[in-house]
Every structure is written in C-alpha cells, then in structure tokens.
Length: 418
Ligand code: GLV
Ligand code: MN
Ligand code: MN
Image (tube, rainbow, N blue to C red; front, side):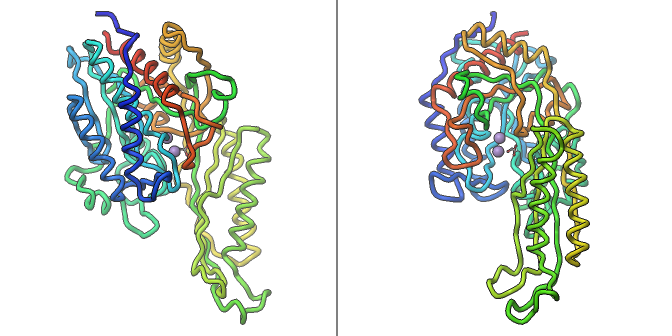
C-alpha cells in the first residue's frame, strides 16, 4: 500500500487531550508548570502512558525516564522512524511547547492507523525527559543521554538547587533500576527523527504561512555563576566595606547584554534568566548570588565570542568588588544541521497537501538538536500567536495544530512505507 497522505486528523480529540494535560500543573490555570520529577510531571507521564496504551502502542521507559511508545512495523529488522517531543514545562509556561509534538505525534500515529496504513518499519513516539533546564540547569537531558552528548557519569552528578542529584531523583521517581548509561542508543538506530513543535517565534504568523520546515537549530550555551561576597547588616556596614554579591551579579547581567550585542552577529542573544540572592531580606546585604545565563547564536563562533566576553566581565567585576566566583559552563553545544533529504521529504508532503511552507532556522533548542547525532533529523513548525512562547498566553489554534499533524502524519507515512 502506498502512503495515505489524506489522513483524517481528529482535531477535537487532540485539543481535548492538550487541554486535559494542561490541567496537570504545579500552578493554577492558565499557567502550566511541570518541572522534571515534580508530582505534576509524574502525573503527566502517567496520563501520556494511558493514551499510548489506549492507542495500542507498546511502551518502554529507559533509565533516564525517556518514554518510547512503539507502533510495530511489518519488518522488525528495519530501523524505526521516530517522532516526539517533551511534556515538561518551565515555570509559568503555556500548554503547547513540547505538548504539540507529543500529543500531535500520537494523533498522527492514530490517524495513520485509522486510515489502514501498515508501516513496513516501526514508528516510535518518544517523550523525552526534561527538555527544559529548570531542575538541573541543562536542557535536553533525556536526548543528551540517548545520544551520548552527555556521559552518564557526568549526568548522575548533576545537582538541582537543593543539592539533590539526578541519581537521587531517579531513585525517588522509580527509574533507577537500570544504570543511566543503558539509555544510550547507537547511531543509526532510527531511520529518521521528525519533531513537530510550535515556532516560538513570529515569522510564520507574520508571513501567513502554516508550516515551517527546519534546516538548522541554533547553538545554545548555559553558564551557572555562583557569587560569594559578604553578608551583613544593611544599616551598620558602610558602603566602602561592602562585598555585595547582588551588585556584582547586576553588573554581570548588564555585561551579558553588552556581550550579546557586540559580537557583530544580529543572531546573538544573551539572557540572565536566573538570579537568586541570599539571604533575601530587605535589611541584609546579599552575601550570595546564583545566576544562570543563556547565550545562543546560529553561528558557533559568534556565540563563543559572547561567552568569552562574559567570562572576562565576571573576572573583572568580581576582582574589583572583592567577590569570589565559581563559573561553570553547563553546556556549550554546536548548532545542528537538519538532513537535506528529510527536509525535501517534508516539503513534498506539504506540496501534496497544498500547504504553503517555508524553510527556517530554529532559534530555540529542542531534543532534535541531539537526535541529529543519532539519525537524520528535521522539525515541522506551526505558527503561534504573536510568536509568544514560555508564557501562559502561548497559543496555536486547533486548525494550525491540525495542519502540523497532517504534515507529520504524511511524513511518517512516507518514511515508514518501506
Ligand atoms: C527550549 O525550551 C529553549 O529554551 O530553547
Ligand atoms: Mn520550552
Ligand atoms: Mn519545546
């Protein structure tokens, strides 16, 4: 049978599932917060497992908590095709980031099943552990471990802000029976990986184009900076005596902005997204500060130039202010190039569905960045209102989601048919 490209997507069921998943949150609606291994994250995983079971998929969970839901193919010797994304959500997030790729991926599989399509090779839906960096400061934890971009022994030592390690969290979450290293997959394990995601930027909406096909994912880096000055009484310690960790951090946050603005590349972005101080009392000098800094560019040399400038600023500011510092690079990844043939496959599916599409770069990172180390990869983007993401008002319409799922289903069919 040739692939049925005109599959019927059940947009109503899909939207119902997206809304039901959004209810599973650490904060009341419309906010979605699901930090890795939180009670909400664990409940959300159970919700997805039930849906995958209902769809007749076979479930496997690896040592990193990545979930694989398989639709077996006729020929088990052929490497499967995979799709998927994540369901964890940063604090104060919306309901579509990651979720569209997971529940949309599931609906693509169900739609192909309903259409009577029989895949030659298996189709896997992957729900990656912790695409978001909230707990451990490093994003794409699950896909880093799958691909070997992060070694298991290094990952096991990762600590959250309470000092709890990944190993301890794995034990609490009940996925520590097998060693973390067993999550590693071999290059070539998949025929291809295609991730459906909201754009998280404004271009598709602005240009009135329903589908983006990703050619490249920008290079992300994350720094964690601990500053130790000296606390004391806000009334009693005179200004020349002070070693205020917050003020050092404030100067460094401004230096991050300057570093991003001065690489000569309009694509460099720098964000100090975490800035915590201790003790956090109005009449007490901040003795300690923790900053987490996100720096990206589509070109690695420009990104690295910004990182170097930030490191220089840290040394200069802390020297001048007599503040001790400990700067860690949590990750500094290269950009990923999508597979040209796969991009063409998605483009021809769009043509056959008569859906306008444009090729584009992903400025956000995704698990696809690391899946590219294992197999050919690309991503399908759909518009989101105002380009807004990582906010509760993040929105893509049911129709926009449905179009994305149609393209994903068509692409999975084209890849799994032989
Ligand atoms: C992913 O959530 C990113 O920060 O790009
Ligand atoms: Mn995100
Ligand atoms: Mn995402």
